[in-house]
Image (cartoon, rainbow, N blue to C red; front, side, top):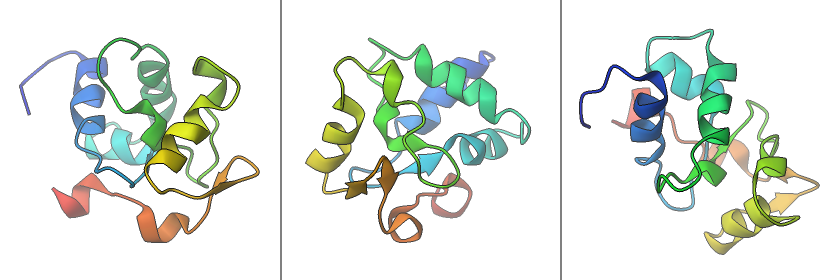
Length: 108
């Protein structure tokens, strides 16, 4: 990971490490970056990630709900991107969430 003082860039660096077919949460990224109460800022970073080659579709809320879906072009793009990676989504919620959840603190 390249060193950056910019919080959004740090968020993007972590998000780029989320493996294909896995998901994580805004709060988990914030905690990993030492800013445990900054889940909302991680969300803002994801909202501003367009054009930065960041797999923002792999970042969901702590319950596995696609809360950021309205920031993607198209009606169901976030869900379609996840499903193309083999992630099952039902009623805007990741299925088998615990099984495919990625925690950088444990996996990096």
